[in-house]
Image 1 (cartoon, rainbow, N blue to C red):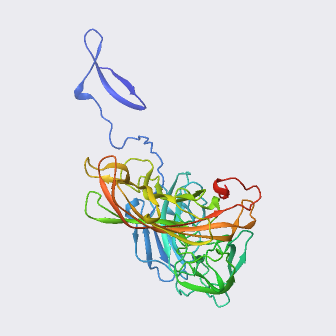
Image 2: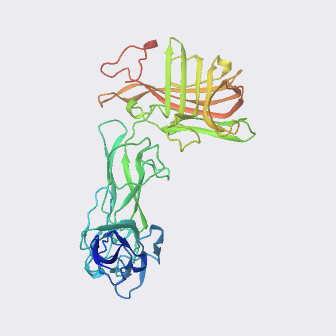
Image 3: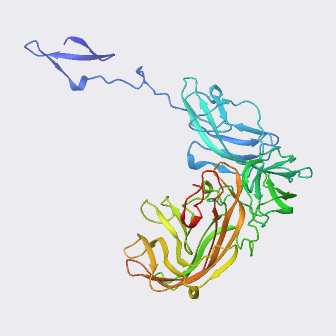
Length: 481
């Protein structure tokens, strides 16, 4: 028997080859050699990114406030640190193919995934008090592979005190346009070092006013408001501001100022409302439950400041007969406001009155059906969700079916009114307010409702003295556009 050597791959395997009588070799299975576990085999491994596991500890006593895990759901909090705690980020439990001591750790204390800003994580850190702070840790191994771990950390105030307003004051300065003022706050100090926020009560009614009337949020970080419309005023008028620091502690600033607010001359009663409105009690939609539809907006005679999506008011006098219309519609674009598909959803009331025997005289005029006035149209618009078919969105308009009861009061006076160029002049102006009810209003689908205890109010300026004015029915031109 002759022996030959067979090379398989990179391993030398000795196989006894048996020759038959014809000189051809055959392999004896009983003589096949196998490689042992001691053979030298090269194993190729892929470098993995580190798996971050860190504890946020108080440096003085190693108390753990938060454990960060490579598994997103594995983070555990053990209370919040304060703004006097020195914090240590202990990441010894981070795992990698390389020793933990060879890893580099970075931190971003104001993390934004779109534009991160990592810096070396060295030594202890202390943070100002804040309601919530988003951070991130990055671990990098010697081969350059990295992993990020984002987390939230809340830092409390160790000694929460109210902002110091002992030297604070609210300044109100008349603006270029009628009833518009610049409002500013100064003199506030705060030991917490946190950002201050302010809420304002401009009209002295005790409620803080949102700067955006579509929003319920009254807080802002603005201390200077260059253009505020104020409908009320006086020689000892109260303007209030509330200041809040990042610790959630508040303090009030109240200033007494003299605000010369132009109002309608000889108008009695003087402004029954400080905002436009049309509202009423609605009943009879599928159930016996009643709801109140309320549309209102801050009053301003400037056309560019009246949002037609919220309120619209129109008065037209032709000879000795006038018509009046007012509508209030809230429009919603976001599907979260109502269940259903995306679209424009609406909710609100509108009313038009005809045959108003307006004499054109200054002072108060009051009218009822006995004077010949009547409701030309009344409407209730609603987007709602019906249960048949399930969750179907209904956009319905209910119009008056039969007669409606209405009263209308009108106060005409010479008043200071604005022009488009920012100037102000004496013009004819009116206030219109009253009540109405419609026992039956019907939709195209046959549903019926009733509107009771309806009320409405608006102010309308006839800008007949503005430069460029003129025209319009009955010698009283339209308001500036």
